Length: 223
Image 1 (cartoon, rainbow, N blue to C red):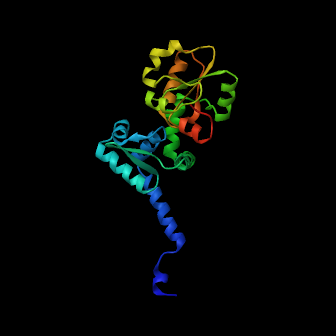
Image 2 (cartoon, helix red, strand yellow):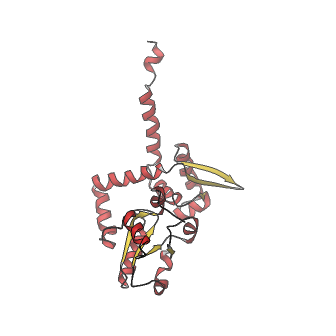
Image 3 (cartoon, rainbow, N blue to C red):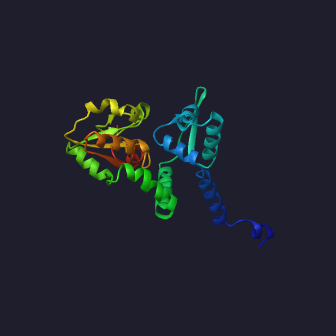
């Protein structure tokens, strides 16, 4: 065996080094926020910076790092650079982080048990249950994301009432049917706040177990 082969990394070590780069690219709260936003639709750097409350330079830096790690793809549209998720598996990767955190990190369990469970202690509606109730005409589906995200894709039969407008439009919702609200994902506060508000006003409301990106990735029908 040559000295070069003896000192060069094994194929497995080389692979693990690349996997570590992907993990490193997830290692910032702002990047997880950006991934949640990009799971809704393709966005420009300017749009992402505004939605994530970051400077343009800061957002650009996070996006560039995640693109280099293979999490994102980009394209030019005139003077704008648009970003999107590279693969639906990116959602699986983020969901695995959520599961590990909830099962094994005390601080995560405390936040979930405090803020999130405090606003909705009921079991969330599964994809299969919602699909069945939609098919039987037993439920009103409420999308509480911003209008632009709804316009780019949403659940069949869904009504769009962004959380910031919900209280002024409660009269438009039926009280004789269950309402299932959803937003960007499992920890999107919009649906938790919407369900809490609806229950305060006498509605029978629950939330979907996650959000539109997960529904779409599961192969469920969408508009």
